[in-house]
Length: 206
Length: 198
Image (tube, rainbow over all chains, first blue to last red; front, side):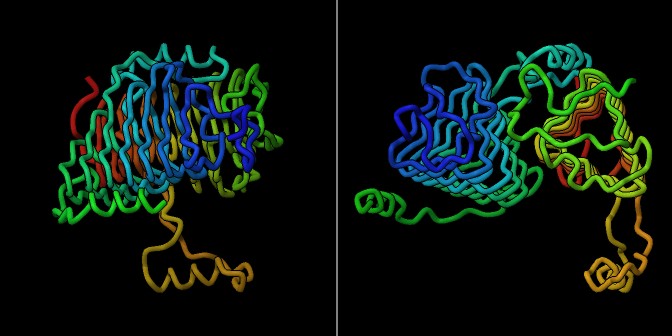
């Protein structure tokens, strides 16, 4: 990142917002990822050591949004719809077209959406802002999320778990568990193995 | 409805003016205060029929992909808000007012190819560079109707022949293969009713 918060390789003429902390060893492909970033939290987003945020990731953040992307985590084309908190741990592999939403942004009752849609047309840039309660999402360490999957509000996915492609995760996932399906169901358990030994040696080598 | 809608012109563009350009095709009618963005909006807009796409007033079509084939017709009501939705139309999409479509959601009113194996071979040949304009076999297509106040979550897909009743709530990632009653809340693949919207 340059002193004026641009990226040397960026094709998009944007800047990294002031309230985003990008570790000097992390890779952010483009500031286009912040086109829908509206958070005014002082410490809104931290991207960890060695993390990679590739093209297509969109931080669609409301005013009070706060998120963390852990060390060595890879993200590719994800949509983070965040009005409260999304925490993603270390060594996570997040595949393309995944959706993490801690809020629906709109009330489920259609009559209440009507005034919001009318108000949206008065805003520039347009957005559907809503006061519906958000429920934080937590993704542990060493989690792998398959492509096109959705993680819905309030969900916690514990360490070491795998979410199969095109899953919709509506409830918490225990540690070292493979889930898949829409809605996602437990498929099997996996052996943790010597995870701590591997992660420490990796950090020391790099 | 008057043809005064603008494409990519607003006090401040919804996403980024860098992605917003291109002429509005002559057979698209857009109501006042409706905004369309994205240079790929009409990349697969293949119909030349008059009024093939009619969008009402006060809509936001942010990064929406209008893939409308020669015989396709799409109508969209007022105050709709679509984010990067993909509309695949070979016949008819009838969308009411106050409808929301989330990021990367899609509607298709066609199977695009036949089911029977022999017909699929014929279709593959007809679609190939060697097809030389030979006719494609008949393909199942049925209109999709979204009534007013429907909400469609991100990554959800609506297939041909589906009618979604007024105020229904389609959860993210749902694959909707059959009609959804008004005010139902559906989830899953295939989508199942999980409750009501209240």
